[in-house]
Length: 558
Image (cartoon, rainbow, N blue to C red; front, side):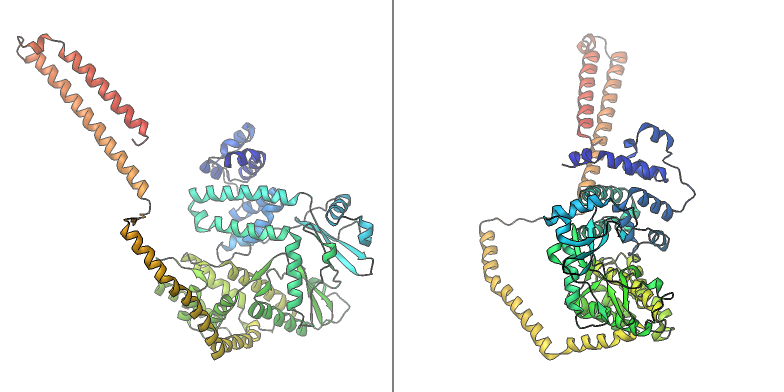
């Protein structure tokens, strides 16, 4: 299967190899055994040990840009993982722009008509042939429905799903190869990052997912009149076409030059209140609230768009996050460390005392800052980055949340530099903490846990009977797993074969020396001397030696 897939994607592999070699990563190709797939001219022109003058981060960015949309999206995901990757890489990944030339209108028309099963003119009263935005996944056209609604129509790029699936196969193979050969790939958890990317990109390329996300967010935000979420027209949507309400307004960068008098402080507070409600109450939040995804539709109203990617926190995760925030605000490093343990996979070898001490020194800088000046997202991300040094693997839901906070704080700072997200979050924290201490909730949780344990208890007699039955029938086995035991046994086998080979060689030499001495100085009347013993012994010993040598080398364990 892997061989067939490799042959199927051979041209794409050669393209990737050529781009890596051109940007000074020939040594990686050499190490993982892919240098040979380059064409002969490219191999002759590429030096595997060539390091050009650009930084590592810049060269990675250039590689991703050359390889196109799938890889650019991967770079953008990497830019959100400040808890894993160093600042030099993050800074370069943030420069990646998801801007590509639009595809022809006729292709957009064909996709719409094929998916919706009707001529374009029957669906839309007017439809602008020129897109108002174009990106790697699709492009957006402005249109008007026959009932007068102004809509935005997102159309997926032709064959983009097939292209992405092909690149996903290749990325998984490369991540596996790199992780086997390079420590840095294991340290940066390259295979985990790729799997996270796969989930995200598959959701983003399926407009049904975005439609469901948009409708859910619109329902959740119904009690926030200052926030507008577009409506989805399901009748005119499919996996490759999404028709939503067109939000007309002003982008963040244009607020200063607008003639309209925007109430920036009120907008900042309304947006913050809505975002915290998404995170702490609904557990369903916009994971990429960058300036391009926020439109100011009126002096005191703003709209969120683009819900291809959203973050999700279940109730337990929200409770754990609140515990983390409370520990931070109370200046309790030990409690912060304990909260982190509930938000991540912890290695068994971790030094808990040292980790708590590092958390203390990291938080000390925030304790010296006035409470209202603390950058919430930055504080969270700093702790996550420290955790990574201890090989603590923070769950991706929390890292997505940290990045969303950092991005969102940048927008709020532009609107109202004096507003503190931490202060607005405090009532939410008190509300959730109060809910945790509610006797009715505690009793409900205990009852739920009791019912779960009841099922386990009811299963015990049956499990006990099965165990006794296996004991009586002698069907009980012991399985031991010792890490790398096969490697150890193979090495032991090699050593024993080499020792055997040395002993046989020594014995062969002793026999030959004895026979030669005996024939030279021994009794000439002896029948052994008159017989061709030396020749016969030599031939027999020589063939035994060759047979043993062949057997050892054939085993592959010499």
